Length: 252
Length: 79
Image 1 (cartoon, rainbow over the protein chains, first blue to last red):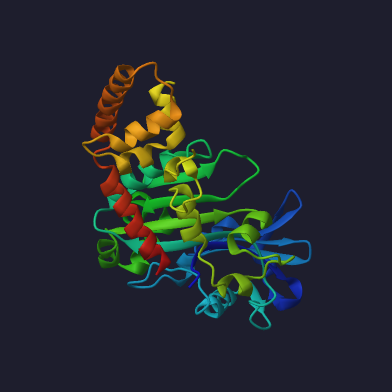
Image 2: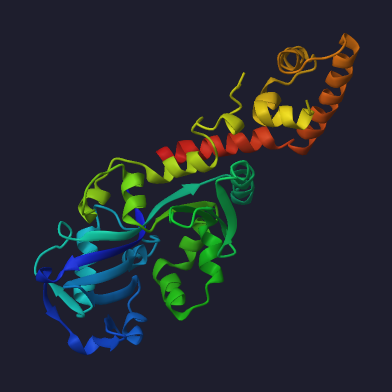
């Protein structure tokens, strides 16, 4: 099942019946919800009004609960829109899942491993063999991110220790998040490695989900049978067997 | 032909996968790839090559273990 850590959506304004105008402010012709309001809403990073649509930047944290880190998937997407509805900033006239268009995605997979640090070392070693295509950088001091050298491509894969990332973040919003999921949950994820494929352009999303759709709908993404995280991981560690150099294919 | 260049061409993983104490496979590879003036030159090259390989294997002593870790991870990501 496709699970997302973060998604940026465009919801057409005809799906919104009420708007709390007092929550919005205008800067440089951009109409957005005030930061001080969003600081109290876990899992909502941005709400803006752009070109007759509402842009929602939502994190899986919106569904976080005791024992649950919170991710977005097909089984909880309606609940997520209900939660946004409950903030009173926007009211939807029906579930906007079908009408929502995807702009940005973090496709995510959490995996339990024996030794998280050794796993990161192993990935780095294998990824290093394709340095001619990708660069390997530190990610939030908790892991690594593998990005293509080409600036036109936004498709990258972050692999990091979720436990370390949570405990290192001292922001007030994160402290509320920790309270929500519970300290015991953090203890349980000490051996969890998180893999996130960041897809920032329509081209990259289409390629990752192997779709030709002109407008990429949230519903299509959430019901996709593809595994973009696995595909990318195999590509960066040369496990696809498509690289004669690292796969060791004889060339003569 | 420089051994490093040769290693790059055939792929380090292929060499490591095939490497064992007798250098039969490497000898075949070298024979195909390089022309040697005499059998003794070939033997010298193979000896050097073997040393280099041993060094590489030593440097990458965790290579296969790491490869297994990554393969196990791929299985889990696919679940």
